[in-house]
Image (cartoon, rainbow, N blue to C red; front, side):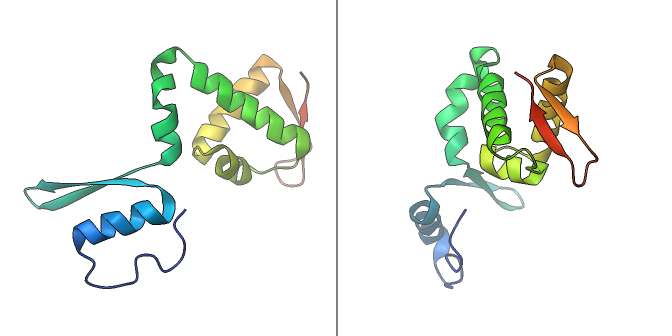
Length: 122
């Protein structure tokens, strides 16, 4: 996440903006000219490090599940939002992972959605 105020200075230009964003948060930025203006792509640092694992046949999914289990062992009441921030994936990704882990029997939900907690079985 970029520190507050990084982009407030005016007249940076695209090159200055790219430089400022990279040095503030290590985020790689690419600008591409298209027919209606330009396209900006921000690359997440974690994605840059882990993208070689995507074609690895589920290694990323296993690592994600392990990260979630580790967090739930320490904080069973963690919300999907908290898990998403900690793991570095979307809340929908967390929802998918939790459902898979429930199906496998790795975790069990105790109590209601609000006020309940996760029990790590394995």
